[in-house]
Each structure stands twice: as structure tokens, then as C-alpha cells.
Image 1 (cartoon, rainbow, N blue to C red):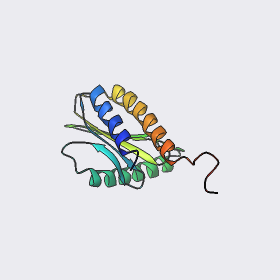
Image 2 (cartoon, rainbow, N blue to C red):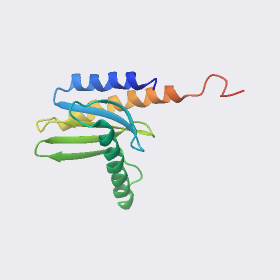
Image 3 (spheres, rainbow, N blue to C red):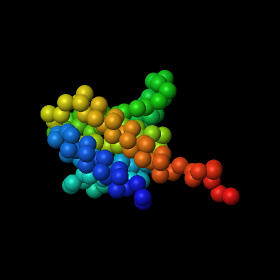
Length: 133
């Protein structure tokens, strides 16, 4: 994919800005891997699990009367996983250690999501003139 390298560069930048981040990946909401910078993680399987978790989060939000889901946080003794919407059709999954400043993690991840959403929008934009002749 044309945008895979650009998305991977963004994920690498996120890890560089937050040393507590141990991995990051971008996937479609259907669970297809777009790009990953997650050493030690089976990225394709993790992307599929991300879609499943997103689906459960959406159902929870809906049953609570909330209109949309923006992020999902999972915390454990050994760290956290945060899922953030990256536009309408993608999600970023970020893995971080237990001492992570969650507020900063959300802030930086939201910025990365906006950039990834922009990359995807640009990659799938119709050519000038509106499409095929």
C-alpha cells in the first residue's frame, strides 16, 4: 500500500515522542493491518483483536446511550493498551508500559490519529475532476 510507509513513519514518531510506548499499529475498523511498529507483537492478529475490542466498545457505548466511541483504554499491572479512532475507517492501537502518563499518551495518540486520518483521506481521495471519465 502506498500509505503504509507514511503511517509507519508516524507510528515510529509516536514511539520516539513517548519512550513508554512499546508498540503501535494502525488497522482498519475491519481488523486489517495498515502498518505496525510493534516489536514482539504478532501485528496481523493484534489488528484483528483491535477490531473485535472496538466492536465491543461501540456496543457498550451504544447501550449506554452514547452516540460514538472515540477511544478505549485497557489497563493492567504490566501496562496499558489504548485504542483511538483515526478517522471513520481506521484505529490506532498503542501499547505502553505501566508508568505511562495516560494523559500525555492520549494527547500524543490523538495527534497521531489526526495525521493518520489525513494520510488515509489523501490516499483514497478521488482524482481532480471527480473520478473516472
